[in-house]
Length: 177
Length: 337
Image 1: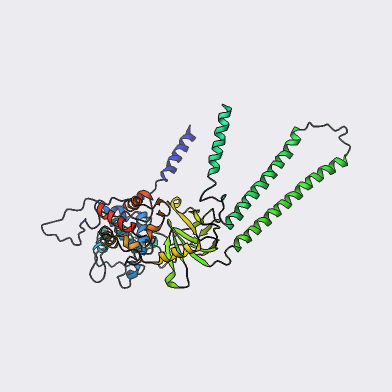
Image 2: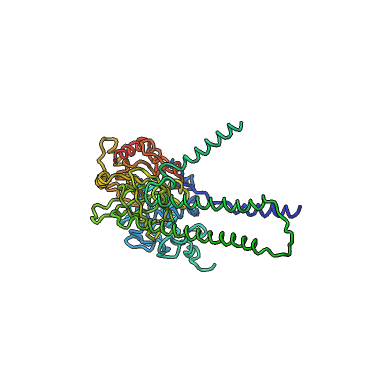
C-alpha cells in the first residue's frame, strides 16, 4: 500500500508543475484606450483622487507573455527609431536608472499614450490600450525592473545587449544584498 | 447483413479515396515536379507491396508443407544443400538489385526536380510570418516590384522560382498538387522551383509546426494564362481605389486614425506598415487571414471585430471600435479591389 501512496504523491507533485501561465489574447476592451485617467502627479485639487479599481499594471508587469509581446511591439512600432534598443538616441535611454517621468507602469503607460514634451508623440487611439500596457511592461524590463523569470530571454536575431532577463536587478543594481 | 456490411465498406473506401483528389493532394499532380513525385510514390509502394507478398509467401509455404523425415540424417545430400544455397543467393541478389534500382530512380527524379526551374523567368520571394505568407514579386525595374499576401499568382505552363525565408520561426511551404515541401528558415534563403501545367487554383499549407495557428496558415497558388497574369500584375501595382461613397470615405479616415495604420500598408495612402499583410488590393483576394475565412463583407467585419475569436493568438489585436466605425472600415476595405 505504501508504494502506491508514494507514487500517488509523486504524481500529484509532478502534475503541479504543469501549471501554465494564462495567455490573455482577448482582453476586455470595454474601458477603451484613453478613458482611464492615469495621474502623472500626486497633487490633486480637492484632496486625493480615488485609486483606480482595476489593477491593470499588476496583471501585465510580471506576465511573460505580455512582456514578450511588448518586445515584439517595441520592434514593430519602431520605438527603436528614437530610443535605439534601449540605449537611447534622439530619445532618452530606457535601460539606465534615470526616469524623467517616473518608473511606474502607470507613468510609462501615460508617456506612451499621451506623449511627453520635446518629441515623444502620443499613441492614443493608434495603439490598443492593452498593447500600451505590454509595451510599458517591456520598457521596465529593459532596466531590470521585471522579474527575471518572466522577462524575455534570447533574441531570435543578433543581440544588441544582454537579454532582458539577464539585466542586473534594478533594486540591487546587480550587487548581492 | 453481410451484403450491407460490404456495401458500407465500399462506400467508406470510396469516400476515403475521394480525399486524394482535389486542390491539395500529392496523389493528384498538376505540375511536373508533383507528377515525378507521385510516380515515385506509386512505383515504390507497388514494388514494395510485391516484395512483401513474395516474402510472406516464402514464409507461408514451409509452414503449409508437410515435413518429410530424412531417411538417413547423417548422410549429406549435396544436391539439396546447393538448391537451398541458390535460392538464398538469388533472393540476396534480387534485394541488392532492387535497392540499387530504387536509389537510382530516386536520384534521377531529384535531377528532374532540380532542372524544372533552371530557365525560370519569374522570381517570387515568399516570407513566412506567424501566421501568414508575404509574397514579393521581384523585377529588374524597382517600380514593378509587387508585394502582396497569402495568394501567389503564377503564369501557367511556365517555371517559377520561389525564394523562401522567414522572419520568426521555421515554416514549410507545401503545395502538394505542384511540388514537394521545403522549409522557410529565418536568416536563410531556400530555393524551390514550381510549375503548374494548367490554369487552376491549388491550395498550399504550412507543413512545419510553427505555433498556435499553424493549421490556419494556408496559401493559394493561382495559375493563369500569361496574358491574364500580366494584367493581374499591372492591376496590383496600381495604388488603392479611392473610397467610392461617404461611408467608405469615413472608413478610410478611421483606418488612418486607428491602430490599423500602425501595421498595415495601403498603397496610395499614408498607411505604410510592413509587419502585417499589405491591404492595397485586399478585396481582390479570395480569402482572409491566410485561408481562414472566405472574402466577404460579413467575414471582414467578423475578422476585424474579433480576430482573437477567429484565430486565437494571431498578432492582429482586438481594436475597440463602435458598430458604425466597424461598418465604415469594412465598407472601405471591401472597395479595395
